[in-house]
Each structure stands twice: as structure tokens, then as C-alpha cells.
Length: 230
Image 1 (tube, rainbow, N blue to C red):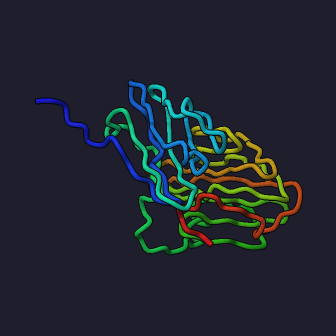
Image 2: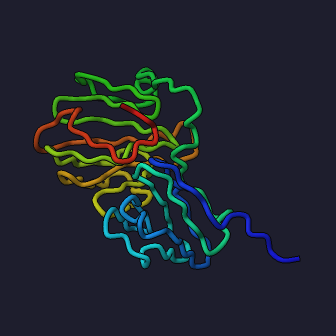
């Protein structure tokens, strides 16, 4: 009896994506119609490709992380040259999309963490919580969630990891399982996001965010918004 191929093609709806996965020990080739290349963002290992996608970019080396994001308005069909059902899922941005969206309570963080006094505002969401101080923010990201892929026109951001081991995208680079104490800069108009890949319910990522330029909550362009936050 021949080997059964579980999945050799997949259709990605508009503003949806595959999971972030890790390839196995064999090279994976992804086929996408070239007319759709402009609608695709691609993670291939440490590269985050948002323009000038090529067929060479769609070759995933063994044991490499990959993710395909459709930022367009129409579905895109993709084909794989082999079965991917045994590839490890690192992060599924739509795993909890059908659950009720209940904002996190700030009491959770006061009980678990030694928060500095003096914050002047909070921004609760169901996937993150932000404490705003006069010159920095503390941002908690819930396990198995990530922020939107976004950019800003009027500010640079500097992110310092205080807790957890997040995956951080900035510009055209992906850093995996970033250690505590590491700082990463997000220049003006560069795409960036942070993902908490932990499967432990109590393991939040804690990020200290500073900025240069003008900080405005409305200065944000979201190109991929799996949490549907407005």
C-alpha cells in the first residue's frame, strides 16, 4: 500500500495565515502563483520577507521555521511538495479566534509581578495588557498569542525582554526565543511584532517598551491582525 499524502495544498483566506511551523529533516518546496506574490508575507528561518518574493524564498530548508501570511483581499492557494502534517506547530494565530474575548484584569499582574508604581494608564485586551508610564510601557503578552504585525510613522521603539522567551519580528529579521535582557529596535515604518509561543498558561512575556519620536496610540498601521483588535 502506497504512502498517503494527508495535505499537499492549502487555501489561505484573506488576512489569514498558516501556523508558524518547523520543517522536518527534508527540504520543503512551496508553490504559489506569481500573481499572488505581492499579497504574501513569508517567514523563512530568520528572514521576514514582505516584498520582492521569489521562488527561491519558497524553498524551506530542513529544520527551519516557516509561515505564510496572506495580507491581500482574496484567498491564495498554496501547494507543498510533501506532507506537512508532522511539522511542529510553534504558533497558531487563530487557535482561539472562536473563544469569547474577555479582557485581562490588571489584578492578575499585581499579584504575580512586582510592578513599579507610577503608571498613568492601562490598556487591557484579551491577549495582552499594557501599563503606561511617563516614558515607557510595560506590555504583557498572553501565552500562545501575538501582537498584530504593525508599523508606526512617527516613532522608533526599543523593546527589552524582561520575562519569557518571545519570537520577535522587526524589519526583515526574525529572532526566536529571545532571552531576558535582550533589546531590539523597531525603526520608524518597519514592520514588527512579538509572539509568545509558550504553551504554559501562566508564562506571560513581559516587554519593556521605550520610544523616540512622538508616541500616539493612533499612530499604527496593522497589516496582519489575527486578534481583530480595532
